Image (tube, rainbow, N blue to C red; front, side, top):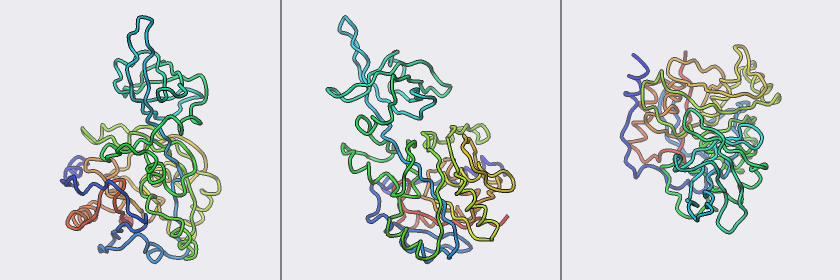
Length: 351
């Protein structure tokens, strides 16, 4: 059976009403489906009882930046121009040069001014076009410190953001987020609270953090043959301390629990065939059924879109039949889907 056949088998129809528009309150009140030899239905705050002392939780501590910024074209001497352009900053490619999607892109011109009307404006020169249509914008200064003032969080397209950005600045961010650079939250971590982390510590569950800055490609569906799908490059980093803790847990036979698909992709990208290596790099890793997953033993993840690379990753991790059964159970029950929805705790399929 080909990967494309498996993708068709994993397809499901989801009523729009099942797409979560708000997160559970408190965060750890969300539902948690435990998927192994059997399926159990629990609540996320019960996680400490589901893990063992000595298990190692690995988090992605990337922080979402306010990457959606409104810009205007300059007004010409004749009074023409000045049209509005929406900018989605992707990442800083080199000092003061960012890649970004522009909307509309064709009429954006060669110069943009980012910032609210009447506020401080930041000039950007459009200096190039990338293969996927993203533009390269060159600024005269470091833009990152100004994004809190001029930008909004780039929520997924299936969430109705409304006019309020302030509430999302806290809610669409993990409580342990530290390293700014993502344009989408590593959403499996949205279920954790400081109190839950304290209870996990008391249980004897260890935890470390890695970093993968989530790019806009996380929303890109698979629209053609799976073998031809191109993953966007994303930057990751594994500290020496994190690598040592993960390798020690593996050597001692303790379970490694990845919080989110981005953590899985980081760990598998850092695997050198014998251990997780410390360091920074870029990854385009595409994990599909048939791809071995070597590092994590358990995976905490949300319920993903049909036709997505994330759905293929969880099927590779837990097994296609288990994921089919789990999603059927979620659809039959009252589970909420996608970024702000409920969670799963998946056991890795035996190889």
